[in-house]
Length: 149
Image 1 (spheres, rainbow, N blue to C red):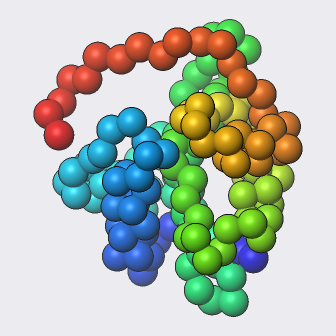
Image 2: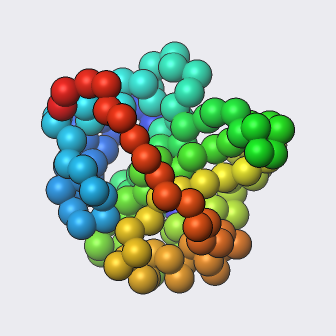
């Protein structure tokens, strides 16, 4: 398995995976193609806040991830949010997520905290994340959306 930075050659396949991911129960809110395309454009462009990665197995794209960066006052440094993590069904349970999480600290040596969201019903994902060193927080997340999708 190889983790590579997302580029324009990955656009259509990543867009397809994003559509599956955002239409699944793994997320609370589906997103329009416009939003998904904006996300990919940010990953492959010069946006300093969002990075995109694809996971390849024998030259085939097996999944993707997006990581955004912000500052955490709780820990006094940069925070990395794993915004998206999707692995195609035929590539699941092969250790791809674990390898990605193991690689994250070397990709982001300045980040002091990584966070992600997970649906409570997604027990398999929770077990994977816990196995990679993540723990559940007991925060409620609130939002106010400023755009129409």
